[in-house]
Length: 472
View 1 (tube, rainbow, N blue to C red):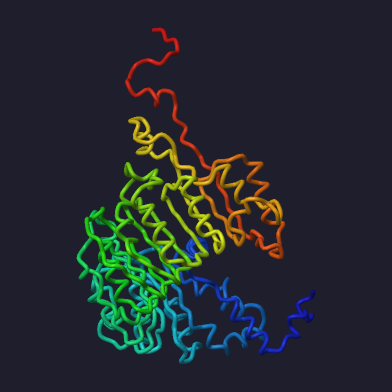
View 2: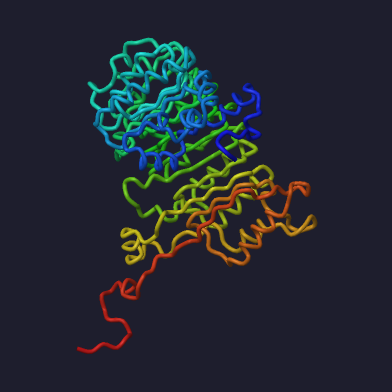
């Protein structure tokens, strides 16, 4: 095609092209894209990158440029992140921000940055900000725009704040009259060895929240209190620290929560958290072990089959009678019989199964524990039995295959089985089209378990010579 020739897309009416342009905007919370952009643009300014929309659309031809500039909705998202913390944004970046503000007209804005100076420019448009993300690591209170505690944010609906400065510098954001989604991460309390007081969690308008991600190192009791104060909550994520208590909480039934994520540094409090809890609308649950403080003795096999925590979790699911579609476990050390019990319980509804083991079992602390006999083997969540139960062999197979609606399977360093059987299972689930009552497996990501390479010398814990001959 020559530069002056017309292709089929040039014949589209502008209203159709305008509609398509809206789908060209990137998803800025994609970690892979963020990493790539930071490599190419050390000063950040992802939204302002000429290689992605909307600027990319402006570089195709004059007609597309004129059309893109005339569509205010293409200019309402401003995402700026710099890998050079503390560096001042370039003048061209600040000028580009003003262009964005102008082209977006008076539409609501979605803004993100980890730069204090960029946020001070955002603050000038407080009346238009609908969603805001602030990554304020290493900021001082002087870095926070004064407007974030004094200005009015009349249409603000969602905040994502990562800061160790407390709520005072962001009080106008935290108490905005239309706020309904909160992500609050305090790295200091999240990495502490013990929980802080509930007063460390900002007093958000809990009764209006539909989304609450609180990562400040709260206790199980504090998490239960927050849930009880949010009658219309739909998404809930807590970072819980501390060990088992002797508390037993009153029963709590929450009928609107559909997504639950719990990050813990110990499995002991899980029994408390799920005791008497009922979530009938739950569709997605994820449990994440927080190993930021280093591996512990309980890490590798987090739950025993007959442990209080595991039984409390199963009873919670049975009591809730929820049609769970997504299960996600990260570094939680579940063994195959536990996984099979769980899949049997959720077999009719499960669409996504994600199990992530530890990145590596060559960790020095794990090797040391092995030498002292604390743990023998890494946990195997999926083995031959589970693979066989997940394999579809026909309409009359008995027992029927587990999880017939499964479309997403992600297993990372937690599966050890006959690889030909695994390949046959995946092939059997990809041949189906849904017409036989078994959904097609659309996305599969599998990394086989990598066992630690202990040497014979590592096994010799008494310091004596091995059986091999030796001579001076």
